[in-house]
Amino acid sequence: MELPKYNGNIHPEEWLKQVQTHCYLKGVENEIQILKICKLMIDSTIIIPKEINSFDELIKSLKSHTTFTIFKNSCKRKLQLMKYNPEKEENYTASFLANFRSLCNYAEINDPDELKTLLINSYLNDFFKIEFPKRVDNIDLKESPYYIDEIVKLFNEVVLDELKIIKSDSLIALKHVTTGRYLSSCDIKYQTGSRRNIVFAGEKFYNSHSIWLLSKIKSHKLNQQNVVFYNDEFHLRHKETNNLFWISYNHKSPTTGQSEDIIKLKIIGDRPDLYLRSHDFTFTINDETFQEVVGHEDRIGANDEWCIELIE
Image (cartoon, rainbow, N blue to C red; front, side):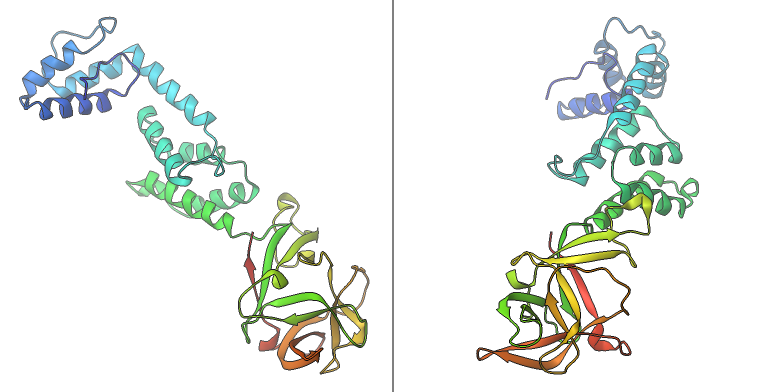
């Protein structure tokens, strides 16, 4: 470890810590001796008063020098240019926030609102820009002595939540809550009705038969067109067969005689709402048994509950 020189490109307090650490490792612990070493390691272009007799006076003098103002402004500029890019971050959020905190400390930024603004501007993501300010505003940061800890904690929580958001063109699986089976399709055809690809509740783990591409048709939130919300209109395309999912009004299911779930081109109309249901009823094709999935317009019950799982 080399003895660090001070030339204005480091925060005075950070530099003093490095000098003290170096001295302690060499067995030098006397403050007067360390202070003398500090003075010798200051660049000759930085003039400070000779009457400095303590670390506090040294730090105060270095902070009053023009070089420190330039250093702080440089750190602020770096903060303004910082961009959070998860795909390029080696350690994702940890490395970004570590650099952010260090620069805030060096720039001596103490205003919670300024910290919030810097973080908002660092990430070009619609969900983050709406959700992060909302959560920060729910906390009285000025009453907390560790407000920067609260702010970076919220940043981390929001970017993690953003990874769980269902978006248009996401790959998903739909798990039937009651039976634990996944909405599935394959190249086997119904033997009656539409005679198109069957839809069924498959295995209790998702596989190639149960992965769907979700695409939005219409959103009720104009400022987040890519995010899927409740009441948004969307359709599902089966990834394996590349067919669209649709509930038929014209054909009945093989076992219970309710609306058959089939894969076909989507038709938008004014028909009554149908709810997706699965149950213990099964149907058999070519000696292979499948758990039935149907569409119905009766009272909603436990068999109508599905859990969306984000695959990709």
